[in-house]
Length: 108
Length: 122
Image (cartoon, rainbow over all chains, first blue to last red; front, side):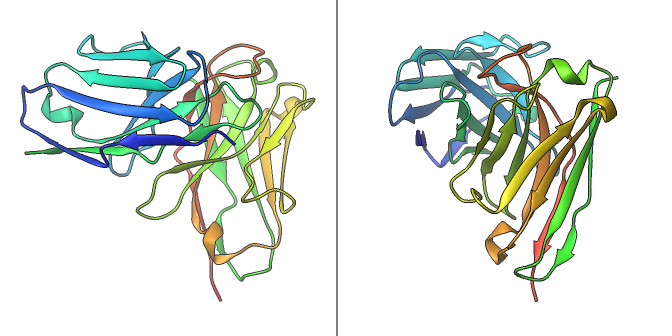
């Protein structure tokens, strides 16, 4: 099983600031990495796939980078609606897919 | 509108069984692999199981292997999860999710249901 490790567990950021979230895979997942956003009481929403491609309707302030084992999600200027929990997921190792433990982005 | 609606959750005693269903609409169901993902109260997401479009490829998380069985009925646009020998640690909100890529073996999930809650307790 590929283990996905996210850091930090919690990130305190002021509105308008930049947020950088990390995700590390225990072995290479190539670019088969997705990021999801989850708000309280809601299902997760796909933000980024292929490590760096924004899903439909996702604002340009969200960007993803990385390949292999190291990945980053950057939110360039945090808006109030961006405070949420973010998960990475590898889908390289079908049929055993795995999520990271999540990073909570909270208001500083 | 593309939609997934889960059902079948509830309160069940340890060791008993439960069957979850997911009704799909708004897309060609038999073109896509489907998955179950769960989330224990206050915890993160855990992929549980996935099934290819034609049921030819199936996978399970180690935590449920041998106890849970995923299946699908393409004629009914439905996904199922048979859960046997349930444990307290299976308590979670169970989501049904759709692959983004057509006919793929490895894809992110673009559509999620709202989930059905399973509580395992005596």
